[in-house]
Length: 276
Ligand SMILES: Nc1ncnc2c1ncn2[C@@H]1O[C@H](COP(=O)(O)OP(=O)(O)OP(=O)(O)O)[C@@H](O)[C@H]1O
Image 1 (cartoon, rainbow, N blue to C red):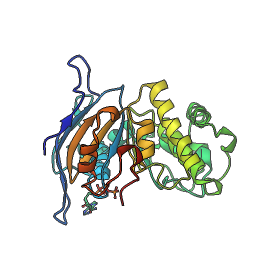
Image 2 (image 1 turned 180 degrees about the horizontal axis):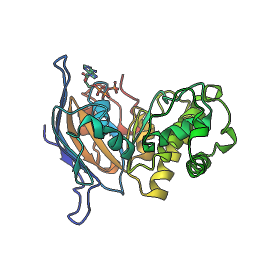
Image 3 (image 1 turned 90 degrees about the vertical axis):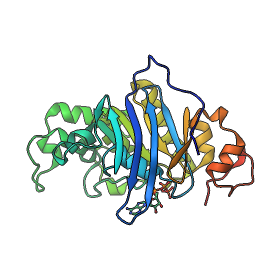
């Protein structure tokens, strides 16, 4: 099936990220990505949709090199990061911030220390496990981490242990940690899947504000289609490892939505639940 591209990128827009013919085959033999291509500019707030197993997480993990693509390219400001050596991976991951469904915080550390962890990849020497993170970082890093907490509205929790926070608060810490990395692009893999609707809205609003204020493109995998409709500036629709739609929500036709969800939905796009 060819990609249904509603809005091609204009010739004068410089893509911040360019994905070319990306293929990912797992050792099990499953081909999760079958030649995916698209470009991302600073204006993009992209939501990736598709049924379970369509390849959404695999795509994001190839973009920050948590996974090495089998073939194809991922260009970050022109640099091909799909083939960089393991020695250079730290630098790539610093440039590409990642937010996960399960927050991935260090439970026994304070909120501030978790955010400072976003600066760890800037440290040239390894950090001894016995040291308090807050002690080894320079003052300017601590000030930056505190500002990041202010940006997500939880600076009053800075000295609290991460495991005493609610899920919504923990996801805000994870966002602050990504901000402390000063990334060029933010990826979020189902960031609201474990949250109640109110916390989910807070997290999505924060991602949108960060995108608008800082001009950082965001790519987010979402299962909740009501949130897709509320937040997506552009949708990438995936089906069975292929990109089948690339364009604004307004031009995504019901027929294509049905194809993306493999005919498993017989309700209107406006009413679609997340597919099972
Ligand atoms: N580590 C792995 N080893 C082997 N196969 C995998 C691995 N991770 C994912 N897959 C397979 O690759 C395909 C794409 O999976 P992926 O997790 O990227 O899909 P997804 O769209 O993110 O699904 P979900 O919405 O359920 O998270 C699926 O068939 C899945 O079973």
